[in-house]
Length: 494
Image: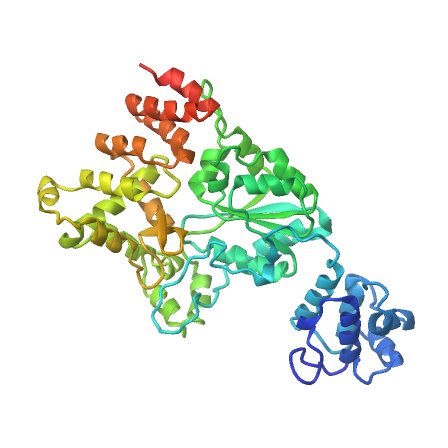
C-alpha cells in the first residue's frame, strides 16, 4: 500500500527545490506525509516490493527522526523508502534526493569559483551554440538521447560511487555532440556536486593541492590543458581521484592516438606523462554521425526547426549541422570574390593554429600574414580599409551559432585577438596537411605570437625544415627560461 503522490512543485505539497538545511528537509518530509500516521507509513513500507534483495522497512524512531527531530541526516535508502510510501516514485524522487544530497553535503568545502552542476551554463562549459531558425528559440535545441548515454551514465555513476573518484573521457571529433552528452549526463547523475571549470592547467594543479570531495573537474578539449607548460601530471590527477573527485573531459580522436602510442625508439617521448594520465580514464568514443536509432529519436523532436533542418542533411552529421560546421567550411572555402580578403584572414589564422599557435592571434599577425594568401592582383587592388571588412566577414555569425574566427575580449569593447572555430580547424588540418606555410608567414609568426606558443612553434618549424625560423623562435623561448627550448636551440642552430 502506498499513498497518492503529492506533486512536489504544486500547491498540494512542499517544494524540495527550496530545501537546503536539515530542519527544512524534516519540515518538507512532514508536509509530504500529510495526515498519514506513523502506523500508516510503517504498514505501507511492509507492502513495498523488495529492493536490492531486502524488504524496505520504517520504524517509529526512524520516522520521528525524518519528520520532526532533525538530529541527523537520514540514509539515502531510508529516504527512498519514505518517498515510496508517500507515493513519490521515480522520476519524481529526483528533486527530493537532490534536496537530501544538498543537506548531506552542506558541510563540505565549496571550491573557489565552483557552482552546482545543475546551475552550470552549458555554453560556458563548451557546448556549441546552435543554428537559429526561429526568433526567440532557446539557445540549445532539445537534447537527442545518444546510444552511448547508458554507458556514459554508468561510467560517471561508478566514478562518483563510494567516494572513490574517477575520470571519464569522451573521444570524438569537433561538433559531434560529445560535450553536450557529457553535460546532460553529468547534470542528471551529479546535479548537486560542485563543478569546477579551470581556466588552465595551472588552476587544475592548484586545486589538486587540496582537492575537495564531491567535485566535478570539467576539462573540455583536454589537449588545451595538456599542451600548456607543466601539463597535467598523471600522479597529480590520480591524487584528485583518490580524494573523491570526478574528472570529466573530452578529446579529439587523433589527440588520443598521438598521446597513447608507444614511444618510437630513438625519439624523445613527449607524451609519456599524457599516456599515463589517459590510463586513468574510462574512454568512450562518440561517433561522428547519428545511428539509425539516434535519428529516430531525433525525428521525435523534429518539431524543433533546428533538428528538422539537421535531419535533412545526409552528408554531415546532425550535431555538426546544428553547430553550423558545414556552413563555416563553405564560408571559408567558397568566399565570394569580393570577400577574398576575409578568406585570406581566415586561412592565415587556420595555418597558424595548424603549426602550433594555440593562443589567440593578434590583429598585427592577421594583417601582416593575410597578403601571403592573395594573388598579386588582389594585393594591388586591395582598398585602404581592406582589413576591417575582412575581419567582419571572418567573424560574422553563421545561422546565429558560430563564426570562422572568434573574437577574444581584452575588456569591454576591446579585442585581444582571434581564435579559429574548432570544427573549421579540424577540417583545415586535413585539407591543408600537405601545404607548407609561406616563408613570409613564418616571418610574421616569429614576430607576432603569444609567448605561450613560442616553444611549440619552434618545434613545429624545426620539424618542417624551417631551421632559421626554428632558431629564432627557440632563442625567444630559451631567453624566457624554457629548458626544452634550450635543447632544441642547440639542435637547430646551423
